[in-house]
Length: 389
Image (cartoon, rainbow, N blue to C red; front, side, top):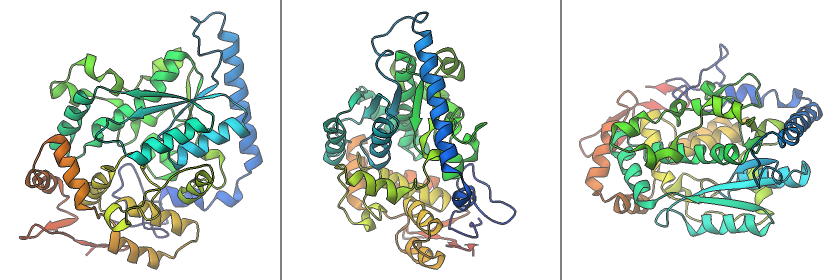
């Protein structure tokens, strides 16, 4: 286990590699931001839009007409959070496009009042929002299977979250899908790297989606008719329907966690109020539409040695808001934490005991990074910023 020499990104993050100089991909990218011609990037974006929109209009006469493809220029996946709110406003008010916002809604037991209010805020801001809600009984079964087998309930739901947006774009023949940050350069998941840093043709290769393959669902007895919306479209489907994934964050000079939140708060974004010792959410601005991501971040910490706090800290170090030593102290104190109430509510939802929950977690703890003591406490075998002791 090695850490980036500048921030505190560990090389245990799936898909990442440190450079010869010991820098993570995100630091390499952020350190070059001052050398970028942002006007040129904006022109690139305008050229992409002009090409795709013009292509869409030219094809209307030969495509099977849809009542949507005449009216929407692009699709944006939204949860109502900081990133999607900023994207939606930028696309409409700066780029002068007509976006269709697409939201995959969590079932009633999972979605938070905060999440519902933030989606309502987007609607009140004047956007068309298409909300898709999948069968809750099937959703619960999928989450339980993913947790029991992989200690990652989101292994199932993330497929649906990422597949829903392109499925809608393809169905309505809307030519552009805007996503936020590029996982390859702004987080370090190099498996998603495309030909250009703004294009997302390899989005399905991110660690969460595993190439878009859902064979594991068939393996555990799920039928195709129940998991279609969990299946990320093939590249041939994108090409056939002239639909393209674009990372909008690549065109922003100031795209980062706190800037996106600060902007969106001005337009009505509501924040989480629980203390970060329970959520790992230092500023209350992540994954506002549901709470169980907190326990998943805890489990991620036990698998890879980093959790949600690492994302905050690394971002703050890169942008000069804290020092590396200050970041180390924050990570040592809060990374991997999770309030008991979130674990209990999740266990109640999938109908397992707390003992079963921890038995599954312990089974997936990375024994190279952690030691499970006799009292069941999980102790790190590494020192933050240095690696294995």
